[in-house]
Image (cartoon, rainbow, N blue to C red; front, side, top):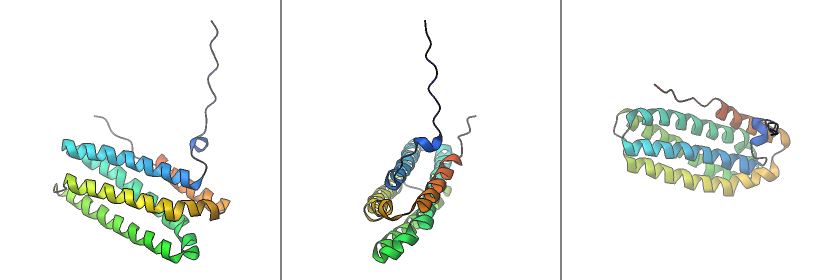
Amino acid sequence: MRIAPPEPMQSHAALMPATIRDRLLADHRRLETLLERLLAAFEANDREDMAQGWTEFESGLLAHLEAEETYLFPALQRASARDASVLIREHRHIRTRLTEIGVALDLHTVRLASARDFVDELRAHSRNEDRLLYRWAGDHLDETQRTSLFEALSTVVRARPSKVVT
């Protein structure tokens, strides 16, 4: 019997989508997965999983927002101040909601309906970003800007806290 040689290992970067739009939408899917786990913890009223899930989701979302604001918004602002203004306002709103839900979570007063509403708001924002920013960025950012954005997003994934099993 002949054993096939192992397939060559692909680098983390080789597995990432190549276009800005694909890469950012992949990060949205990663955040959506974290949100789904978080909602499951809310539904089960599992305080420990809620706290851990919230920490992971919040840090990932804040890093995602920061990457967009650092590497995409300035260029979009120069090209379309109106579109940039819409997304900047949405980011401010998201940060406000993150704070509100985080405080409610700490005080054990968070409501599942509020968490679901926030999920709906994030999904609407994702659609706006795709329409106003991601497609535009794919056509207008240079290779250096694109590389910097990808590195910032990859750092978030690599720095993700791991779950402690006791």
